[in-house]
Length: 303
Image (tube, rainbow, N blue to C red; front, side):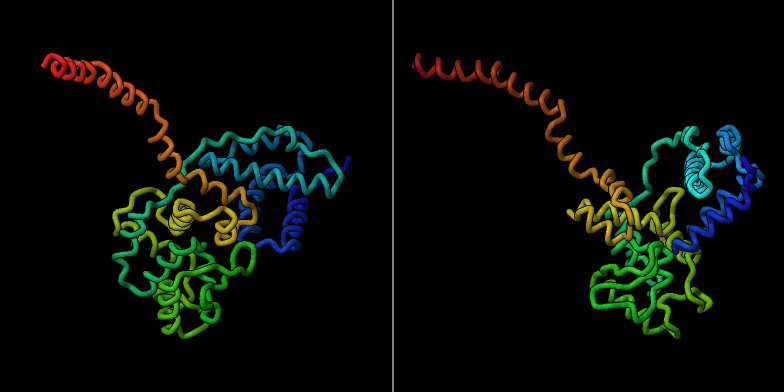
C-alpha cells in the first residue's frame, strides 16, 4: 500500500473545500487545525494511534480539542473516499466536552446596553445586532443600497441573504449611511470600512459601560441574546433559523434550551412544594377551622 504524504492529502482536501464554495473563513478554520497535524504526521497514518497522540498534544479548552477532532474527522472521511483506503478516525473516540452555558443577555441587560450609546454609528450597530442577531462579518458587509424597506441584504457564512429589520433600526441605518462617503454603511474611526475586530471593540466598550460582566463581551453574545429572547417572546424555530442564517436547524435548537420561561411556569405550578403548602392549608382548615365552625354551630343550637 503506497504511502500518502499528509501535506499533499491536506492540499487536496482544502482544494475540494474551495471548489465547493466554502467561505474563506471556513477554509482558514480547517487550515488552522489541520496544518499542525500535517507537521506532526508527515505521512498519512493508517492507524488511530498517531491521531490520538496528536489530539492528546492539542492545548486549550475542551472546545479547542473537539474542534481539532471534528476537522480531522472531516479530513479523513474525504481522504478515505478519495483514495479508497480505510478510515482510521472510525476507531478514535471523540474528546469529552463538558456541557457549557451559552453566554447571553437578559432583556433588561439589552436595555442597559442600548441606552448610553449616544454615538450614532455605535448605536446603529448595537441596535442592528439586537434586532436580528446579525453576525459581525455581516454587519461589516452591509452596503447602502442593500438597506430595503423592511430588510437588509448581507453577505454571511452561507453567501448573500436577506434579514428583517425593525423600523427604528432602518432609520438609524439610513442616518449612518447618509454620512458614508462610499458604498459601505459602517466605517472605523479612520474612515475605512469597519472590521470584525472594530465591532468587537465597540461592543465590548459599551458592555463594560453598561456594567455587563463575563468573559464573552463581543457581538456574538448579543446574537445569542437575540436568539434566546426571540423564542421567549413567542417566535418559532423555523423563522429564527432563517433570520440567523443557520444551515441546520439543530444549530437553532440550541436557543430553545435557553428558553426558561415555560420551564419556570411549569415549575411554579407543579413543584412538590406547592403540594406541601396546599396540604398544610387543607390540614389547617380541617383541624382548627373545622373545630371553630363546629363551636359556632353548637353555640347557635344552644341559643
